[in-house]
Image (cartoon, rainbow, N blue to C red; front, side):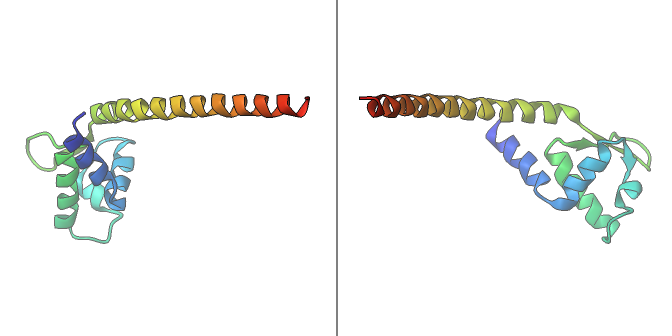
Length: 115
């Protein structure tokens, strides 16, 4: 996943309303009106949030007559998971190296105390 794509995805999810919309869509598709129900904002503002989510590839609205359903695009989450996993593995490798160094230092300290 490109850095530009990741920036758009994480930027879209950084907003609490959009994050909530994604969470609600995880339970199933919804119309724009259904998505707008719990928010104290205009329908136009909801469409702006959806446009950001669409630009990030997180949701889609198939063409067709109104009302169109908003659908969560799970492929983006697979790409995010792979991106996050790569950095998690790097961090774990660093921690394993640190653990080995600390264990070696501990062994050296214990060995000195027995002299």
